[in-house]
Image (cartoon, rainbow, N blue to C red; front, side, top):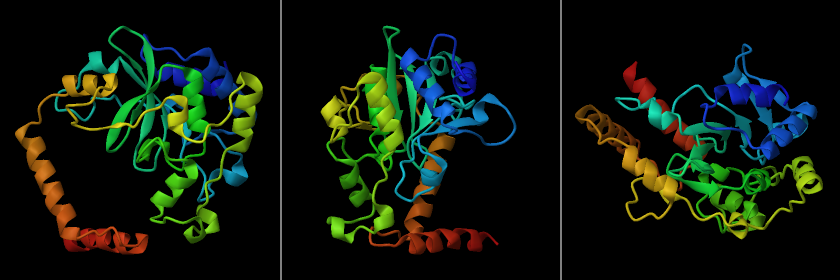
Amino acid sequence: MKTFARNLTALMPSGITLPPELIETFDWLEDQGWHQLRAEDRPENHWLSIYPEDQRNHPGASHVTFSGSTLPFTGHWSAPDAKIDNRIAEIATTSGDGGRAAIWLDQSGKQQFVHIGHDTLGIISHDPLVFLQFMAMGYPEPGALEGTDLTPLQSALDDNGHENLDDLAPEDLPVPPVAFQIFLHDRFGLTMPATARDIGIGDFTEYGDTESTDAFARWVTSVTPEPTEADLAYELELMRTVESLDLKDSDSSDEILQKIGTLFKSKE
């Protein structure tokens, strides 16, 4: 076990362990020179890219990076719960809006790989190899997928508001992590499917969906406390702020940034 895997293990609750397939994969990524350190040498500052340096910041590269966190799952709750936090270990970032992947101990104590997104959550798979396939497919943001029946290219088109490939700028085309994919094929015999659904990953559940059959989503709903009056007041104020920006689907990125900028100007 090399540096990254040791540091990630140090961040995990005692009842959760890294499967051998992930340790071997993390060690290989580290051997490629893709192990990075954000700041001072602390476990939470270590991360792994799935790309070589010359592709890492390409606009079409996937947002996937492997890393852990000291922030507990219930840390933002009015009353954090260590019993819940001890069942979840963050292991990857999967989207630009804070989406992440984690290992969750289910009700029977079995480890499941789960998605915790900005709008959705759910089980990815219990199989570490399926999890690695999903991380390596080249989705721009696997933690923000509208549907797991989309290909990475279709997802990129949706993300950019286009329907046809000809409308997509060359720099916005997905850049698959080819070297990572080749390693997974040579070591574990994994091939890359056309869609995540092809390897058994279903659509993720929207938060608050009481009809969901996803075990992780149902568990999160069952353990999440009712919002306090302060929580409700904050959410109401946030909704009013968003409405005041008058954001439209047709707005360009620059227009959205300009509207957000007016919030700061109004406070000056």
